[in-house]
Image (tube, rainbow, N blue to C red; front, top):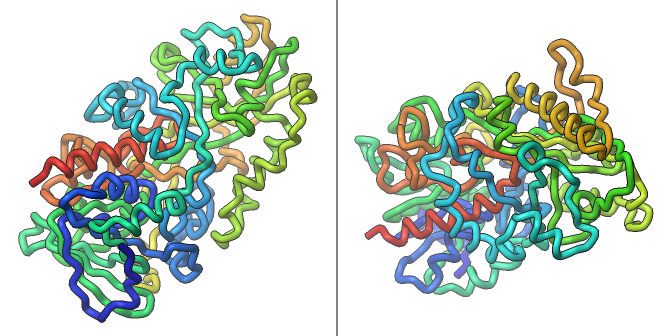
Length: 507
């Protein structure tokens, strides 16, 4: 069922059993799990069923740290959320990503990688992916040109990704949501306040406002905040009428530990012979699965490094990425098909590419958790009266160390096996090198409402429930304690399905 919140009477009361704030990948995944149940679900979406410039402008904010994309353009604010310009790349986090690593401060999840396998498998269906199999040997058998480079897997491995169509959640799942009798979607419904009782120990409702000026109130038994990392933080911090530091922020953790996947060209690889590169390059753009070079878990432990991966790019295509941050237009509508435009720039000539011996390492790493990398409120108010945000993205010396040493280790393995040579970019050899101007993120926002069983170390517990609030949950990448190197969407969907199962068990 669908209602435009601008078209109902002012000061309407909307009541249900469960209220989900945000209809992106996380919110839609949870709502789908409740179709046909006896729970009345209210699904609130800030935008409409299609792109709306006025609503999109609510994402405006300032970058006051490491150079980053314009905040207005990097997240989409309508039904389906940022899956509207998602490139569809999917992979799982690795077992080491869930461990508490002594050399990675603030690392460790409250459960193991194996504990979410069943949800990854279910998430594959939601994201229209192939078999739940990320074993490189499986994919080598699917294509004679998909052969991994002959490295010692205890040193350098091939980590696999799969590609969704990409699935546009707002398109594929629109009819399922609109036709469900127990799912009530309200569009153009902006939550402006999470209302607590006088003791601050329970959520009693939500204040909602439309850009046309109407006010509504939502009351439910349980609430899920699924707006995306930046908007999750904005709403929690702005809801400060009872708790002066914001909801869930008793320990000054909301907004801290902002993490991305830094993307930067770090080296150039010259192959010594003709190796079939279909697994690494051709499949990246044309097939359902592709591989990246990555450090083994053994190497990560031995050299005390973060998780690392390198996508092999042709030199002419890598130059597009080197200009990606500066060329990103501010208007979100212009970037809806940015990745499609990027893909179309590739020369589709398989025979020619098989003979090319030079590749650029487009590095992406796990960012180390950093409490000073954060989202803060500014004094500027947006069109619905909320404080806009400032993003202070900060990287660390461990991030830089990982890129340099990982490239050296892979270069040594290239030489040891006779596969080729690696030439590191000059900036990696500078004393205290600055980050290159072309360093960018992956448009992956994570970590700012991190998960931990200890309320002094995390905003939410192992079930994604906000500490000290029995009926408020958070979904999405903002709950990740660490981020690995995998694109976050598959894990976001998996954790959302896990959360849905938990919510179903509640009275």
